[in-house]
Figure 1: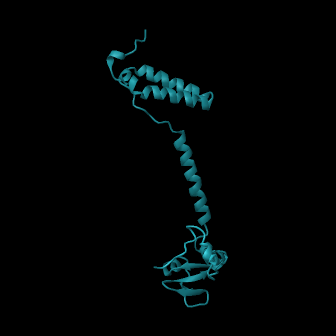
Figure 2: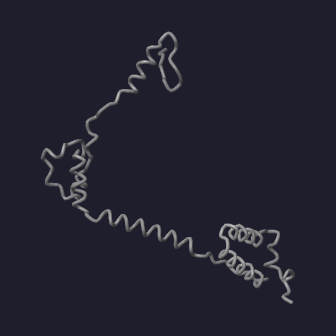
Figure 3: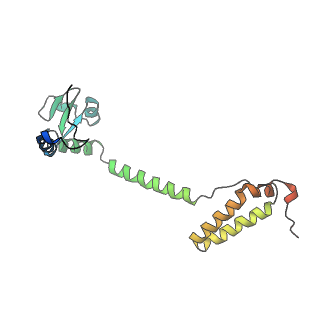
Length: 168
């Protein structure tokens, strides 16, 4: 039966303490693969960058189904291939933020109830007045009103004719 040491489980037994030291040294050792400053690109990527003429030169290192290219060269080619990429990105982010703000501004329309529509309209007008005053307090009060309107205990007030309010 084989014995295995798993550092994730805990420390090594006393009779084999040196394993702890070995695993710590292995964890501390930084492996340099030599490809940190390179970007892996495929032939399709090279075509998009208009850099197919670089195949076979020292700029590209052939590896499996693609090539390794110096990261600085890749960034330069990317900037030349699409010089307005940052502006497009910036415009897209601004548009997303504006759309989000527009969504927040839009009021959600509700269906008007069949019974006590005047009461419902009065509640909505009161909510608008309060929203102009103190926003936090108004939101809490409006939420409380909406809870009353949506509460199942008061549901018949807006559906049953027997619960209709008299205006006089």
